[in-house]
Amino acid sequence: MKKMLQITLGILTAIGGFVDIGDLVANAAVGARFRLGLAWVVLVGVVGIIVYAEMAGRVAAISGRPVFSLVRERLGPGFGLANLVASLFINFLTLSAEIAGVAIALAMVASVHYILLVPFTAVLIWIVVWRLPFERMEQVFGLGGLALLAFMFALVQFGPDWGNVIHQATHPSIAKEENIFTYAYFGIALFGAAMTPYEVFFFSSGAVEERWTRKDLALNRANVYVGFPLGGALSLSIMAIASLVLAPMHIGVDTLPQVALPVAVVSGKIALACAILGIFAATFGAALETGLSAGYCLGQYFGWQWGKYVRPREAARFHVVVIVMVLLGVLVIMTGVDPVKVTEYSIVLSAAALPLTYFPILVVSNDPDYMGDKTNGPVLNFIATLYLGLIVIIALATIPLMIITKAGA
Amino acid sequence: MLVIVVSLAVLAWRMVPHPVGAARTYGKYQGKAVTTAKSALSNVETVRLAARTAAAGNAFGPYTTVVISDAEEGLSGVQGTFDSIQPPDDRADALAQDLDALLSDALEHVREARVAVRRGVLDELATVAEPLTDDAGKLDAFKEQHS
Image (tube, rainbow over all chains, first blue to last red; front, side, top):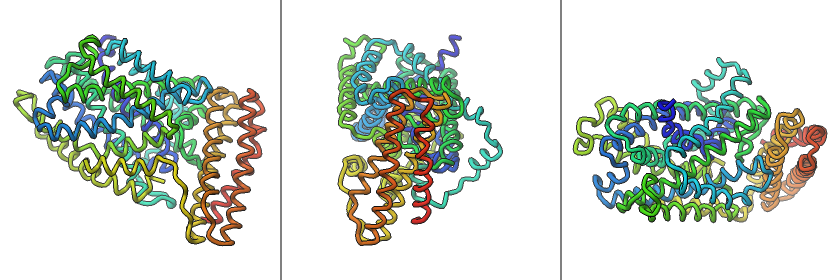
């Protein structure tokens, strides 16, 4: 049991990273619009995040320092600052959307407009960040997020023609009402969602919070190899059930509550309750990840005391950053801006900023001064370099595609 | 840094509500009408599916309320956006009238479904939402005719 609980960092990171409000809506929207024609992107994203999260966790375990603090030291303050600004901006957009996501999940059971629940949500997030120990936080929200298995259950209960499902996923095609640009735009959105930068910042900082050492390298691999494929499988289930239930009815997914509708249709009230619980836990987990990641990034760049493993008084600036980010996120959502739009832009812009995050990880994990004998092997370097090339191409294509497709409209 | 500046500009443009520009030709206007009909159809079908699911005892009242209210808001939004587009000629005027009538009917029927679910009459929700079947059929036909 203890061993199982040790992989909750990976589960929380993956569930918060893979099935936050952006992924929930993006996967369901893609399923309803392209059926399983973009399922392959999720698989490519899962492999990419596994490769880089394993490196980030290994760097943290061997050096005892998270990736961000090494970026400035190894690549200089200029590159570190560019990375910091881009990461904070995307983190902030994502955090705002996640706060709204938690409020919407609560609204699904309270039947109150979600805007009214946003301040309450912010207080809840602050209490958890302030009071709950890191490991307990992982366990509660990582395991709570497993309630999203309701989507997998509904998919199995639906009983699709699995041959047809696999055929659709392995023979991607573009529907006649779509074009190559919208297809590519949504592909980039899914890839950006799978490889969101805050996942690796949170994962590597979490490893330091848990005081991982060289002895924990197996635990790092277990977290990565269990957590991220699980997140990917949940993403694919959401996409598949939306393609089976919503696409035939010409329903496009524009809101978070619509995502859970196929589960209610197929499996009824109990499964719906689980799906809503899972959405709550996943968005709450993602809000914690993004809020803490903002504190981690700034704290690590400027060399402040940071983290939840020290008392708040000793890491006052870190906690102030988290609180300020949460408050600013609340202000953004209280303006009435569409939270789904905010999150769509955050994941697409993540794609544009990916090289700033992943290039330094590749450099540091190959540096024997930090890694000793645990630098990357040639096979891993080959795969990671291929992904870096892909990431650069995607980063260059993102903004033009966003403009050409009017953000996928 | 350039990426961030461009991103901020795009975000500001896309997220802040702004008036919809005039469609200069009938073809462009027709394209916007089809997009509007598609969005409206999605919202109407969402309400039909939610109503059927709740009536069958497969969804809670609060959840169904949120789904239907969101769809109503979405439908009202697409109608408002379409109404703000200036029709370029007489043919476009006629097209606008046809679509606007469909959207108004659908919005009225969605509103009735929302009132029913707020009153907790989930058992009768499928009956209350029945007129939406006709609305969905008409919106689909409009979409096909003008695509």
